[in-house]
Length: 102
Image (cartoon, rainbow, N blue to C red; front, side, top):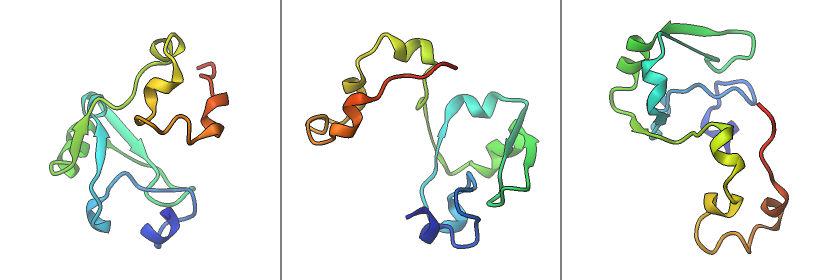
């Protein structure tokens, strides 16, 4: 799916901007408080770095949410809490997952 959504990007390198691709973008809210934000612009051998304020301006129309948690929070939680209701039983591959070390 990513390859067809981002045809001008190298495989596995997806830029953090959905608007040029007519996609809704969801950004973890604390990213905007970083002094510098760096990302691959669709190419593995390039890196774009900008101020957090500039990144915020690029994402003025993006959705913002708290979507990430530190590993320490996850270690004490049951992985089933992170699946949609009724999906745990339908996804046996998820049942063997566990947090990895930072």
